[in-house]
Length: 237
View 1 (cartoon, rainbow, N blue to C red):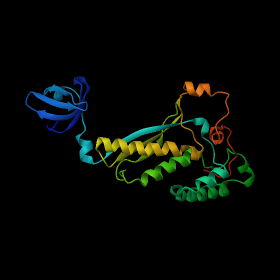
View 2 (view 1 turned 90 degrees about the vertical axis):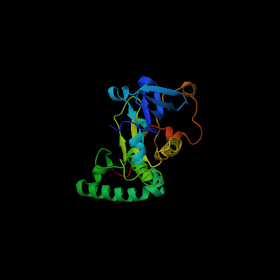
View 3 (view 1 turned 180 degrees about the horizontal axis):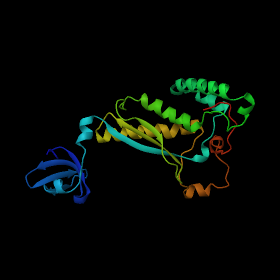
View 4 (view 1 turned 60 degrees about the vertical axis):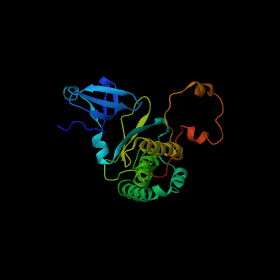
């Protein structure tokens, strides 16, 4: 069986191995770990014990990005007219918003009298979290480093005490470690920075600095994002 080859990146925690195979013999396999140490593994261990070989990832031409943003559930709300107007200025969102607003308006007109739409629970309405999810999809679809022919998901996971995880599950077209880490970091730099544009907050466990700010006025421009009072919306989803 072609279990390992020279040059394969393997992980075998049992033997402290995590790096490239530099030598394969009948009795041992030598691995140069990423910290430049050498691990020697008895050849029979590769048959009798489990290990991870990253060769398939390298040959596929795609390296998985699987990371979530924990969104503060208290910041999730329906979209109001001012927020909608601001979001319509985002180029990547325009096709989604145009289609979604037509769909929602047609549904509400067909199923509800106008008086019922005054109640937020009635009808369909656009939410900031759903629109942010659509933005993530559009942003990643337009990203030159993301493989469009491999698994592509932007999904909600089960809410926890740390908020609502919004997971990015896509594949980067550059499998080199340093390049992959740079691309992944750039993507999440952008998504974290754009999150407040949707009236959303990332969840973070309060630290000492946060506790010291209790009772102090918010800095200019932050009050609107931190407010948990949802404005009454005019749009639907």
